[in-house]
Image 1 (cartoon, rainbow over the protein chains, first blue to last red):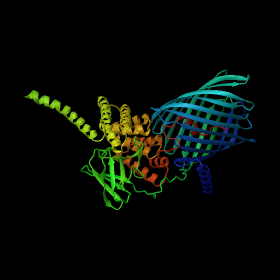
Image 2 (cartoon, one colour):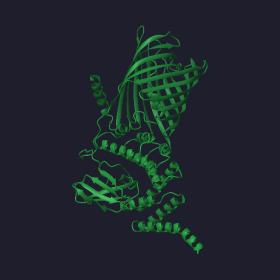
Image 3 (cartoon, one colour):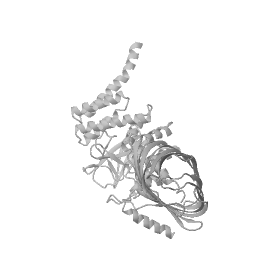
Image 4 (tube, each protein chain N blue to C red):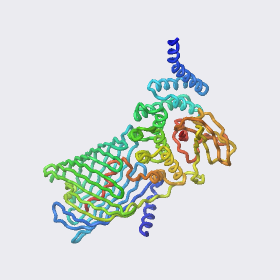
Length: 372
Length: 215
């Protein structure tokens, strides 16, 4: 338990400065072994440690992953990736997405590669399906020099209960300073299924690489959770080369164990000087006779008035039935209503803890749901 | 005699409608100036022509009047609500009831994506979608991000949750927030919907959430 407590302390401390209220940090780490067969090198065994940390707050998402590998014979390899994305508010089903990504690869078999990507996308998304189109500009280091890469992508996704599917087409153009230039198109379909403790991923794609033979790519992955924290992971697949980073394609098989998720709840901010309470500030009790009793708990005062869409927005005095407990009776059809209260003739306000929205008149108005 | 009776019956809805309009006129007349009243009534006439409910429009005007808002601000607020009701009608369909349209308009204003609202209506095709929409709006009003709120409500609705169970979710999330939990986390914990990759996950999140590939 010591490592978890230390990690909690570390991450909580790290993100406290990032306005953590409403935020979530997740971390996991994989330990595994596998076999890699690069296109330009003989197959060899490898042992991996792969930590992953993500931070989500509202529409912003930041993730960092790394893989540290020990090769069969000797030497280490690393792959470090960090990315951040932010989504715009939705307008008529459309929303924008801006993201940036940095990636670094280094190992003894291939040359070192680095990539910095800035990407913009437009999504048209609903609850269960969506489409997107986007473009990206990248600066890529292939071990010798930097070059520019331009990418465009489009795709569609579908989510039905625990089944998800995604289709993507990417076109990438690159130029390697008089050495090589070209472009490729990669089309891929992927599915994800979750059944109880089992999560399955599969994808199949085809790379149409200018000047090279077409390559069929695929992947299969499975994750079986032994309990909430520990899972077994397995994966196999074939992927295509990355001409810009000068990384070869290859085949792989891996097995391992995943410790996840480590979810850290950073301490929320308390926005009010009121003592925190679990009691509901406003409660509606509707009897069989159709009369609803609106009960307000909180203010110990001389008078409490209520006005709302069920009183034609005329103030109605509430009756004190116990110290700090105020009631009003009304007979209205079931629905969502708006209201404000006034204590001792003061300002019209929304009681603490009640869902409220902009009232269009430079103030706030509380929402209350009355069901028949 | 029969003709007179038929004529009388035919006139009843018209008289009721006229009476209703006059009643609304009288409510407004005592609370707003003549120009504001004319502006609100013109918008109500537009709503009637689109077969949209008018009561919420008068109600909004009365709210503005009770808060001492200037007339042009009241008319603007009513016009905005009319737009939201029209948008809700588009998302919920012609058969939507007045209470569903009003709840839908609230969800639109709160920032719920149209796709979510339509999908909720599809999930609740055989029963009223009023409560799910109201719960969705209230969750957002409590500070839960729209996508997370929509995912929470949709997940429960898809699994056949009743109105009472959805209200229970709202109560529990509200209590958790009052107790100091971040809204996004309260909604996630109470609904069982993960917050890190809320459905629908934007593709970049799916991409980033994929297992790390080869070294």
